[in-house]
Length: 112
Length: 111
Image 1 (cartoon, rainbow over the protein chains, first blue to last red):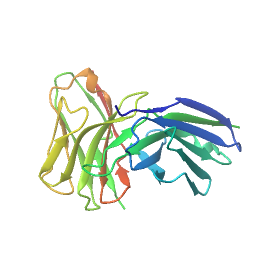
Image 2: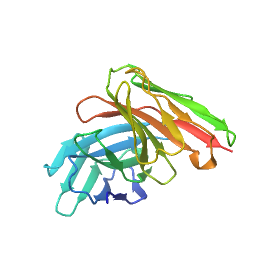
Image 3: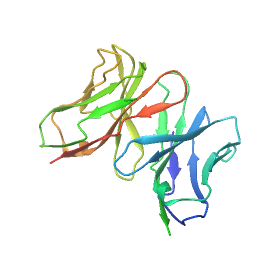
């Protein structure tokens, strides 16, 4: 079946790097996404990677994809207090209604 | 830019009451979605629509109904509200391409 798993909580010190990990089971996905959700707000698309790519960098964000192990990670360099939020990993599938399968989210807490 | 707008933001319902969550988008997107988010869980798809007049069930449709009479609007109807429907509801839309735009969410409590 389709499943996306993430660790539920990560705590980092301000200025350090954060690495949020995600594993998935369905290798037929076309895209893999990272969404950010701040308290009381909707989901904001942070970045996505095509399933045939290994890495994508976007300013402080680095996405690594290991297709063989079905493992996706999001690295946030120089983590700031404003990065405190819940981060959702999601698998996206082309065709039809463009199904998205979400993980449960990782709550990132940034402390001084 | 308005994007995807949901109303109401918060609502408390009594068991057995009915209500409609409104969703409208001003981006002329064909695809629209309703998700629910339960604590500690990822988003689950309730219903989706690929265009005006066309809707279909997602993963968790029981207890809900939708309609899509226009491209802009995709209301979600709860009939006979139950405590299990206490959740945060997100509407979203997409055009061709990868980006799905989410509304800010509607917090619903059924007591």
